[in-house]
Length: 85
Image (cartoon, rainbow, N blue to C red; front, top):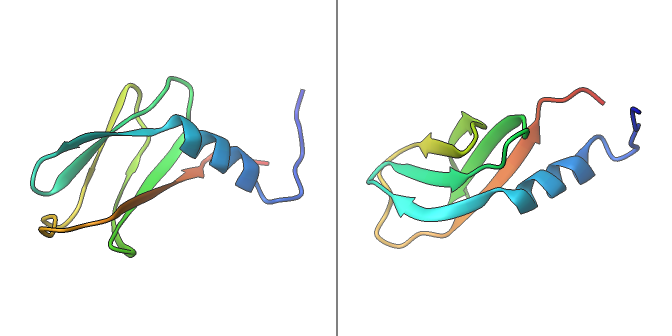
């Protein structure tokens, strides 16, 4: 059964974001995220409120690469679904 939304898919993306977890692992210019099976889309990461990197979702682990991480940083991320509404 297909469900249409009036929010442009934002609710689905919020559910996906709730399922993706930052592992706490970083390696200079990359961050790792746990991704459950079945999620499709792109993971976009911001560091200190600035766009930093993006990568297609891959289960069980998605690695996002960007510039070297600053000494102090705040990480935020967003899942952009590739499923058509």
